[in-house]
Image 1 (tube, helix red, strand yellow):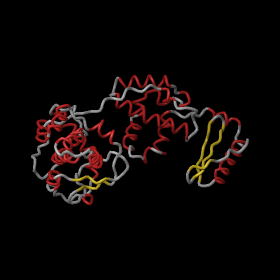
Image 2 (cartoon, rainbow, N blue to C red):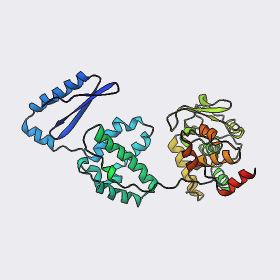
Image 3 (cartoon, helix red, strand yellow):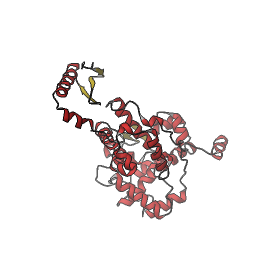
Image 4 (cartoon, rainbow, N blue to C red):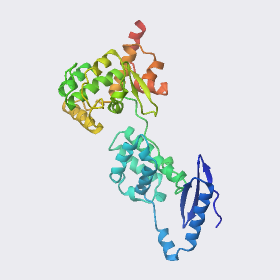
Length: 337
């Protein structure tokens, strides 16, 4: 068998070789190391007993195996690592028998059955997010592991993308949430429920995401802005502080280096439980971002190009179509003003 020619990818070299119907691959620092690996594989193949070769042919890579490989190779190093880890932990529950099926035998028809089942359990937005992740997993198997000749997700019809949420938060709803959390406006937060209430108010002044607020350390806080080192789009940004936001920050008096001394999971659970108790299950914490952006435009007349700097949107189209959804009355009021 002829040795395969290694290919250079950036600062590294890679090669692959077909052994007993299964493609194996390697990535090394030099071309010579790749050739040495391939040569050793061929020597190993020629010295392997026939019985062992037949046993190797029976080895399959299941969907679950593949997802584990993807997580270790890529997933745990991405910003979505928490979401991917959650998907991995509940993988067999989500996919049932398909989880342990040989990836070379998974078809678009299999995935269509799975999609239909998921659509009966969760929203189309959730299904689209899962399809995006698992399509990337199969692309990894195709283009990096060379285990597949094509990605079966490419033959799957996706659900329609749901309309963007334009949920405004009423003042009466704000008061219900704050009251249920046993917090009063202007109060120094002392217990966990106070910090959840405080963060809810702070989010509506800054348009910051929950995770961004929870990531703030005292060294990130300046007189007129907060510096976010790590954001969703992969870049840092400075968030200007309104007078109301500065007043809220002045209430924080604890010694913890974190602005909000709570874990993300504890924060999320407390907010979800409060919503359920007061009958606001349709409200998401992320709706504070939409509310803040709408207020910045309606009340403070912030132009969209400045708004994008505040929110961290690289594409103004996404900002306008997703977060700022004025109704006709808002537009008429702006024209009159």
